[in-house]
Length: 119
Image 1: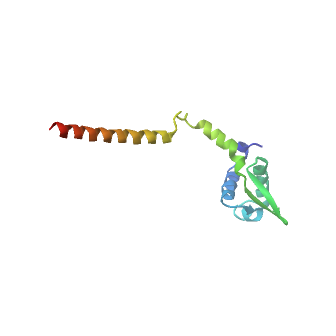
Image 2: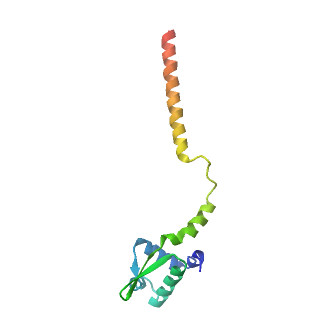
Image 3: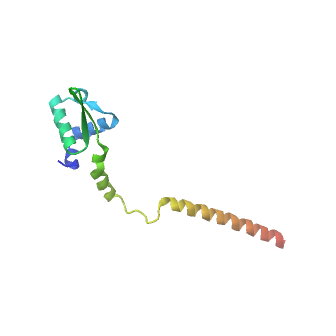
């Protein structure tokens, strides 16, 4: 199952948000939802198959956590939807603005000095 299919279900999206806060055991997650523990486990398995979560075994318990690298396909898709970026980086305009202000100040100072000398 791919990332988009895994995220199609609202319970799985909610589980992903919950795991973004902190890792959790299946028991803890099941306590937060009005569905059975096996149903939560199945949702977590789907998220794990999609690469969105990973599990670590601690004794008899499995602790699930978000796998940020699994979100790469989603990030790539959303980047494609962004408007085309300017070929000039935004910070370059800050430097241009600073230079225009400096030049304007210098011209005003030069004009004031010329007027004082001719008067």
